[in-house]
View (spheres, rainbow, N blue to C red):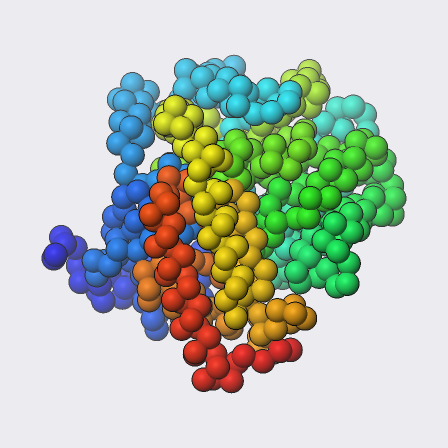
Length: 463
Ligand SMILES: *Cc1c(COP(=O)(O)O)cnc(C)c1O
């Protein structure tokens, strides 16, 4: 069993000494030490102690085809030998970027036929901010530049993307949001729906968009951006009434609609894109994560005929990244899209594994700690609560019980994340029914252990 690496404690000490982690409390990390992952296959990751852990989060929502696909390794190696880098600035191009743009245009719905490549989800959303503002400027409406987004949305960590996001803790660090970004409330019925039915609540939250547009003046609003299903915000599945109403309002006031599909793209919701699951057609889609199944970084903005015609038909769009359309990333993305399609991965999610997971996941709502259990395709959440009937929150600080549950999951070799007191999953799309059974069994065991622990510590109290 001894692997060819330093002992875990030494790796942890070096990690704490030199590695600054994203979204990590450095002090806690130094005391406790990181869990160090050494290898992975399928839906299983292995840590430096040899534990085999079921990865219920597909890394960070991205490893859609699962770990260890040799085809992607080969695609990268082939492309590195042929042409490891060339840029796409100044009227140059290369074959992987051309082929990938064509393939994405085929897969994307509606007239989303044009692709601007970026390095990640965050900088794709920065591209989108600049592109929609450039669009209205080119149409001689430069004052139409405000972007409306949602509290508790997540659109990335750059200055622009974090401004679009509605994470107040992120805004508080670094003077965000940037000017011209405003927020409306999220369609989270469980936490915020009060006495309304989910359907009425979905409409009410969508109509906040209309109220905000009227308050600012439609002549000043460039775009609305939202995730079809909020991911990092806690897998908030909106009521069915929400998205059609958002689209109606955007059309009525001539506001561009941006769907941030960084998580929901490439099969996650059972269709190729989340906007198809919710019956809307955006003007721009943000993609990243599942585009390459996380094997290599890449993002893109997929753009409608209408928007592309204006951007391409005006003076040079003074924007781009050295690695826009990186040939190795594009080659890996193409091969990843081939696997999702020809291996039947997306089709199998829709026909077989998502319905199987849905039945099991919704069964978790019978557990005494679980309020609602929501799932769409391969992304699900459960709300932990001291009282299902009243949809109560815990008296303890939000996330106290969620963190305990996450630690029990880790102890039981399951990666399930917590967002506040919601537990969330987003497994690789290749998870099998037998592996879903393991996921559910470990989740239930962890919920049982959490309940015992919070009862013992007096934490099972309503706020
Ligand atoms: C992860 C995420 C992003 C940011 O992507 P990065 O590649 O981390 O920059 C943007 N939008 C959504 C919806 C995401 O989940």
